[in-house]
Length: 474
Image 1 (cartoon, helix red, strand yellow):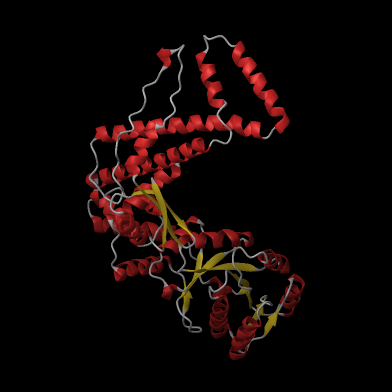
Image 2 (cartoon, helix red, strand yellow; image 1 turned 135 degrees about the vertical axis):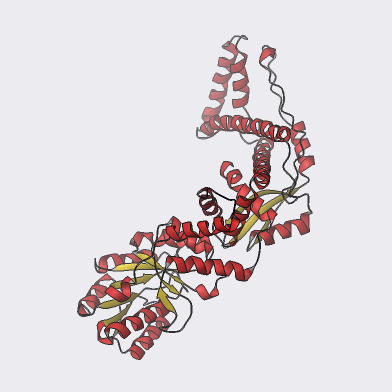
């Protein structure tokens, strides 16, 4: 079996690459999001590999107990590649799939049992190995022939410690299991398409929004009536709206000490200027002060100082928690103090120092994570997980004018139960920022779906929705 990995920005592009290079009979082994895109592992010559694997299966000989012999599973079934979306097979074909899948699972369990004593023996000293083998032989010789099951276990446990063929067979079995589970998932998806095509259409639209597969399934499971597709669609949008948490323009209306955090390039400094200008227009410029903790880049401080000069508000740069406390004491008479933090990647080792500065600088600091809406869901999840240590009061969505879908960021904020405070969709200060409204955000996501007018094809639906349960079992 020839295996090859393909990486692309989206599933449809990756599937097209597989079809062009390996042909329509290629089999999708795995599908996962990785490094800002989708990685697909595909294979060809699956039939030959399956026949060879069946021929090379080790046969356990138990001469003294022929009644316990189990019939060998029939591995002659030839599954179709998931790139060819075939109609669902009859129940007999599905039962045959399940029989093969169960036999493969049993083989993998046997291999796992055999691995445990090997791992234990490898931890012992080299000098102790001959003694252990000798004792094992003596115990085996002392056992009567009326206990064949124990003898079989001993043979399995005495498998070679570094047998490449053993490891290769185990790897092939695991791949085979994944293939069969993908095929069964495809059968289930095809059966759903025949039994309830309205549900399939709803899932297709939800996927078009950019929502995660798990979120799409969760929304669809809450719809009871699929008779009218449009009505079901509006119900789904209403459910998404109800799941979204938003704040009530807290920063502009109430003020306080606010820290904007997030990775590099999400627009923290520009957002600070927008919020400062909005607050100054409503409450007066004398009520605003700006602080930056970005002492690493001179350009960052200069940019914020330029905004401060234009707005007529003071700007202070701090390097640690002591300087931050001192600056906050100086600005204690200000109704709004905005803190612009240094832009760092979520894996930057300096983030710990940044967190310490904010957490110990003053207990009254409220933090908001900035999330770029044009980043995929996996990257946003990592950002939220990293900055959760600050116990943020909410988030601000930026770069809405640069994204083609909002489903990824919506799934993340709903899953993380992170309230959305503001939406930023441009570079103009202070025009391009407004308080978040759940209804408006979902409506905007639906409008982007209509503008793009790209329907999710059947291959992508089978790969994404049908592969959820398959990947969970590997």
